[in-house]
Length: 274
Image (cartoon, rainbow, N blue to C red; front, side):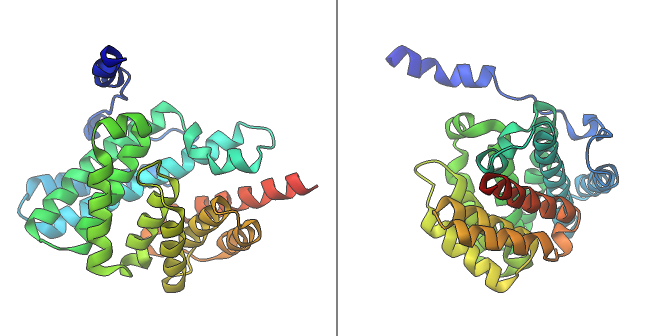
């Protein structure tokens, strides 16, 4: 056992995903959301501008925001594509759709988020305590952890870094950008394994996020954590609201996909009840 534990980091490193450099990232395929190509072109341009002006905090902030939006669009599109490949998935499968996203999408997300994290760190160093920098540090770390999976993320020490970034963003301004710091804390605590998982804190965070901004993504994630807490009726109510709610500026790219993911949850419930 001791020999196995000693070799575990090497085993995990050996099966780690390869993240291409941002400039080498393949263009989105025809199967991916139609807006992906335009968004990624804009994100890459913002990244290049930030690299060319490393003392410009606004350029770094713009780059990290666009790179996260591009990564999130790839993730949500990958989740829907995974569900499209299944015949009548049940609610548990629908809720775990992001676990079925293919490696090509994971690698694209890693490429976007590695660059986005660098831009967020740069913005944070130039403008200490900036809520946008702390939020995007957490957002990018959350998708890096997702792409690598829980075992590799644990070994890489991503948990403490992610928790610290989330706490800093919540402390700076929990209502910022449609309550995004609270949304991130709720999503992380609702899905993370021990020792970070905390359904009670997740529910509290997402309920407050919905009070501040009843947009699709907040309602969708609240429904998910209510389901995890055993509140089936509450989950369905929130998913139905999510399927018809509006988005905001930072979720405008992924908004149609988030609505559709809410509808897939409702459809799975309907199939189970029929």
